Structures are given as structure tokens and as C-alpha cells.
Length: 328
Ligand SMILES: NC(=O)c1ccc[n+]([C@@H]2O[C@H](COP(=O)([O-])OP(=O)(O)OC[C@H]3O[C@@H](n4cnc5c(N)ncnc54)[C@H](O)[C@@H]3O)[C@@H](O)[C@H]2O)c1
Image 1 (cartoon, rainbow, N blue to C red):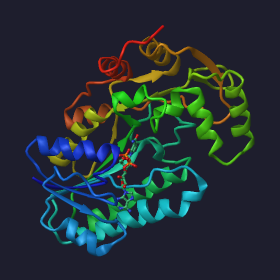
Image 2: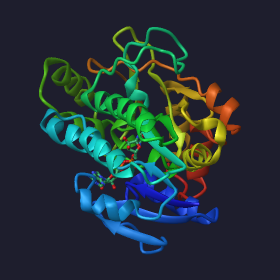
Image 3: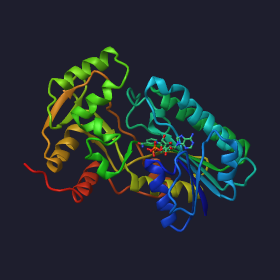
Image 4: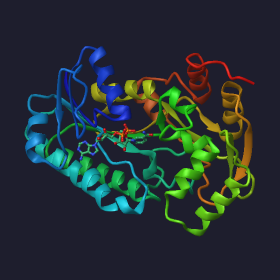
């Protein structure tokens, strides 16, 4: 199949474009940052540029729409809507009348109120009440895909990704996602870049009270002392999920939670991680977020016919094989 991957220079899009090519598909990458020359075709352009979109869609049979802004700082609000909502509208409008066989939309678990779920595990019929503007733009993107997909006769599938990482990123204190999630100094740096609300300031103080150089891991606890819980998906599993969303007939018109094998509790996962990194582990009660949720991927397993290979423990094991032993 001839597939357009938007966001093909991103963390997931670059892996997806390579994976689809390895599976025999013809792949065109589209991104603000010029995608790899290893693809069949590669276009540098913006979702907000109609001429670039016409060029990107020319001759393709399917679209994996991953291009987006992932941002949580209030200064990024306008761009979030321009890219994730208006950009998705422009792409769907440009796709009208082209006879696309599939349009897969990269949505997010943030369409749910993950900080305050009404029921666990979160299934696809859980109310969608995003708690971040980013989550809101993903929900608006879904609405556009459903409505314009139906109007323009574009067979679509909506994939609500959970947090996705490469295994190596999990152990990287400077990694974009896991750095602040699992490492004290990285978390302090992240919070110092956020608006200095009272919960942010109190959390920085709690982290600074135990911070040292060199870096340490921390286990996020809520104010009752309960460890955080969430899911993570290995990017290799995610590529397989997206490929199935693009090719399985049963996916058309459906919305799926997409994730890894199991959710994890931070205390268990971080103590396991520390066996590989050799870093000390501290427990810290946070005042900012309280992530204690679990998302069901059962519908995707049943309909798309795939069971993911990785949970966080297998990802840590895998990353450990590429890492020197800790010097303790
Ligand atoms: N990584 C995760 O944990 C996660 C979780 C849920 C959903 N998602 C979704 O998956 C998709 C890919 O995520 P990622 O982690 O690879 O993000 P990423 O930031 O690494 O990649 C996004 C890509 O989109 C491109 N882009 C941004 N604005 C653009 C524009 N106007 N025109 C063209 N390209 C543009 C960027 O240059 C970047 O290469 C996104 O839609 C994201 O919302 C990611």
C-alpha cells in the first residue's frame, strides 16, 4: 500500500515509517523537519500549508496522521490548536475525493480525565473529559476525523495511544519523557520551566529536599502516599498496532485504546529500573499530578488481533542489554 506518514520525523513517526517500509509498503514521510531520505519519498512541509498537503497526498492510498504539537505549557496554546485542530482539518479537507482506503489518526489517552478517572480500567466508552488543552485538541481532532471522514467517505480509525517510548529512553535522565518522570533533577528542571503555581513550587521544594548530584530515581507518590500507576507502550508495539489499524478491515470506523502489555506501579517499576542503572531510589510525595490509572486495550487485542510484546519490565530488560553494567 502507498502510505503517507505525517509527523515522519518524530519519535513515533520515524519508527513507523521505517517499520511500514520494512513490511513492503511504499512510504512517503511528511513533516516540518524533512523526513529520512531512506523513505520512498520525503516532503518537508506544514499541515497548515494547503499546497504542501496536496503534494503530500498525491497518489497515496492511506494516511497515518501523527504530526502534532505535544505541549503542556500555556504559552503553546495557540499553536496547539493551529497544528492539532486546524492542521487536522486542513489535512482531511485536502484528502476529500482522493479515494483513500484508510486514515489512521494518532489520538491520545489524554482525551480521558486520566488524573481523575470515573472508573478503572479506562475503556473506550469512558467519558472523554480532557484535563489538558493538548488532550482537548486531540479530542477535537477525533471529532473532525469522525465527521469529515463520514462526509468525505474516508474510512478512518482512531487510535488513542498511551505514553510511548523507546526502551532506551526509559533509562535516560535527559530523555524527553522519562527523564523527568523517573529522575529527580530532571523533574526539578522540568517544573522550573512551568508556570510557578503553588503545587509546582511545593513539588519543587519536596524534590529539592532529597536531590543530589549525581542523579537519583524517585518514586512518585500522591499526598496519601500511594504510588502512581500508568501504562507505557514500546514504540515497536505501537508501530505494529498502527500498521494493523491501516490494514485490518475490522478497524474501519472504530476507536481503540492502544498501549503496552500491562500498566505498572511506579514503586515496582523504579526499583526494578534501579537494578539496571545503579541509581539510588527516593520516594517523593508530589503536589502536582496524581497519575493512578489503568487503560484497557482489550478491544484492540480482540479486533485488531495483536497482543503487545512489551511491558515496562521487558523494556527495562531490553534496554539493559545495550547498557554498560552500573559501577556500584
Ligand atoms: N509519544 C507519546 O507518548 C504519545 C502519546 C499519545 C499520543 N501521541 C501522539 O502520537 C503522535 C506522534 O507523537 P511523537 O511522540 O512521535 O511526537 P513528536 O513530537 O516526536 O513528533 C511529532 C512530529 O510532528 C511534526 N509536526 C509538528 N507540527 C507540524 C506541522 N504543522 N506540520 C507538519 N509536521 C508537524 C514535528 O516536527 C514532529 O516531527 C502525535 O500525534 C502525538 O500527539 C504520542
